[in-house]
Image (tube, rainbow, N blue to C red):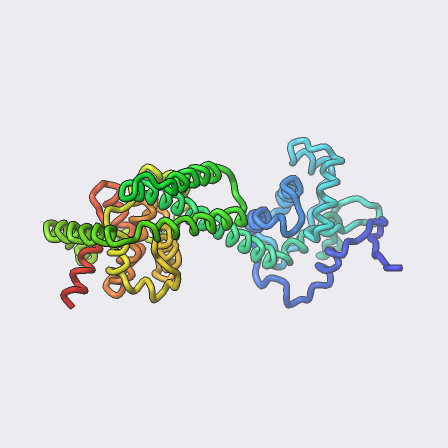
Length: 403
């Protein structure tokens, strides 16, 4: 029969508790940890430790009895409030409920009971020595690094879901735009109605909170329809239309030389150096909120032709705007552009135009002193209605043709 150790008052000690007790000394964190930051990390990673919001509320109450903000160091991490004091600190939580949540925290290995001989919680001093009986917070402190890793894993999973959701939203917009364009060049084809229906159903689904598996399934379906639509649309007539678009953009390029030279002037004048490149806590607008924006007027194939460096760093195929967005998301961190600068650019430029700007910046990366600040400067112009990405792309094409 397996032996289960017990405390002096016949309370079983959990195996999670034993793992904390037997934890080697080398695994103890090297520095003190702020108790409230640790609680926030545990709140993010609560599923990994099997605790609920109510459990964490009780833990928060216990932490409030610990006098210092930091756990660790040489301080003894035992708190000894009475059940009545804990319940009062928890806005009158019933004692039976509080004890149940305490038991869960102990079972999860986040707390350890230090029972006195008579079962009371108190501190006793013997000269300079101090002995406390109550709840020991050291298991929580000892697991702080594990908690931080679990919280980071949760954030990474949330980021994957957020990015996949943005890609699906852009694919839906691509699908709707291709349906309209296809109906103009090949009217009467029932396939365009199928694309519109799929775009509408996807938009409705995106109003809900979807799992990463659901989003991946939507992405696969949309990818297949987009490729099918592109194969139908791509033909001799469409190639001629794209060529005409290129001539139109070049004409726009030649008639707006001041606009083309405006972006490099930001570098020379030092405007970018004064723009902060810091992460902020501003809320991020959902990509669906940009649905009222039109796709960029410049053809996608011209963007790809003007920015060949993008294919060096992104191996995926880029035939649709959502794929360009995915490529921009991929190269953005390596360029030193913060997440907040990228999200702000999407908010004011739209995700497609922001992706074009990142691709163009990658092409001129050696000439840009502060990519994050440069993007923020262009975003400020876009917010004021004074920016278009077309001249940037055509300037790059002009440089390639002149080389």
